[in-house]
Amino acid sequence: MVAEQANVIEKMSVEIAELRVRLNMNSRNSSKPPSSDGYAKPAPKSRRQRSGKKPGKQSGDPGHHLAQRSDPDMTQTHTPTTCEGCGNDLSDTEASGVIVRQAFDLPPVALFCTEHRAERKRCSCGAKTTGSFPPEATAPACYGPALRAYVCYLVTRQHIPIARVAELLRDTYGAPISTGTIISMVREGATMLEAFLAQVKDLLSTSEVVHADETGLRVEAALAWVHAVSSTELTLYHLDHKRGTEAMDAMGVLEHLSGVLVHDGWAPYRKYDNVTHALCNSHHLRELDAAAATTGQAWAADMAGLLSDTWQLVLEAKAADQGALDDDVLTTLRASYEDIIAAGHRANPPVAPTGKRGRPKRSKSHNLLVRLDVHRDSVLQFAIDFAVPFDNNLCERDIRMVKIAQRVSGGFRSTEGAEAFLAFRSYLSTVAKQGVNRLEALQRLFDNNTWMPAVPGAGP
Image (tube, rainbow, N blue to C red):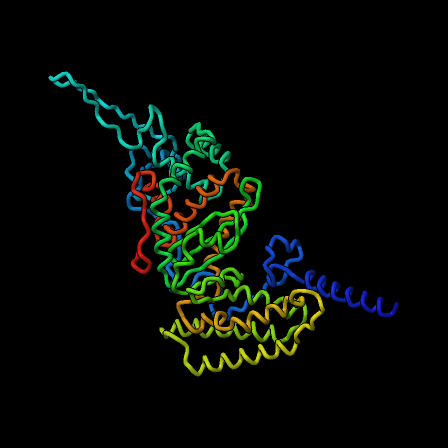
């Protein structure tokens, strides 16, 4: 009975410890979203060093304000008719001065209708010849490229639900567009992006540093996966019903890389041995904070400080136009890293075999320690190669737009609709990274002059 009670107490102690760790998790020390924090928001915490600048506009900054124009679209003159002092008539009095104020407002908006007339002429030989209509005149009454571009912008960039887009166009332009017509416009534009997507895929395959991430998406009332691959100038999304390497191979980018792949450490990315792996240290900092705060792992706080300090050294070296850290700095960094890992192993001794099949269960802190130990070169890649960032935030920002769309609309009713949305997201994200106006790029798309990405590093 005593042995049985001891076994129960041990199991309960483990469960209590796990529940206590889970209770102390929040958006700052785990992958939980900020919305899960409720009203018990954790205190703000930042490892950024103070810049010494005061809040607000800095000295010497020209600032931003609404300035008057020298060429107003319309001028109205307001002439006083009677004197404010004595009431005399001022109608024939010449003005002694003028005070100018300009009001900037939206012009009256309405659909602009252009009627295209194709003349027919009969030749002396008897044949009839008809003039050619422009590409946008596809039917007796149809919507032009500018409106179609605007519709796709509202749906795929601003994430406005389709029914509300129809309502917006009806209220602002008096355009009675149905939701079915809007869906057709988005799908039409997506089919015109095939050449663009193929070129982005080719350019990403030859990029020196590529980021990768994935997230779930509700499609046809089931869980699908969106895989994102991006660089500082390119973005590509891929929809698949699988999450692992089979879906990544179907995307057709990662297996062709030869540079650096930045990711969050998910095991399937390790399949690609054709790349140099770099791990996201923002993930590590969150996990290290959790290990230090919830389980009292002192080594975790030391490792978080080391990574943050090293990133600050890299930023300072970049600001000084240095191409790499000094060899002595790297040697000291590796020695400090080794010391912290050794302290971590002392705090987390190997788990004794339980006699059951499989690997003995380890705590989250122990798993984090093993990852930092085994993949130390991937963790410190940002300090070795300055072209590699400290984290994977670039791709996480790109993929966050997919989650926003799902949060607004709840998911996609069809796979075709989800793929069309992701095609537009690839287009809009890439044009923004290369300094092109999104609406202008969409206008070009529907003018049959699709904007194509420049070779990375060659400029827009």
